Amino acid sequence: MLAQRNVLAHEYGEIKQERMWLVATVHVPALIPQLEAVLPPPPSE
Image (cartoon, rainbow, N blue to C red; front, side, top):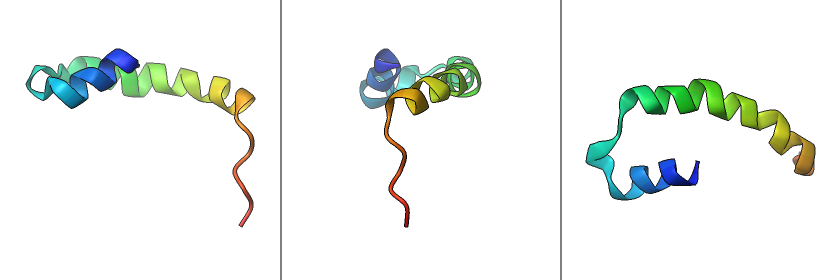
C-alpha cells in the first residue's frame, strides 16, 4: 500500500490501471475488516 502511495504521489505517469483496479477491488476490501478490528468506532453524531 505504501509503495502504491509513492507511485501515485511521485510517478503519476507510471500508474498501471490494472494494478490500481486490483488494489481497489481486492486488497482494500480485504484490509477493511482488519482495520475495523483495531480502530475505535467512529464518534456518534
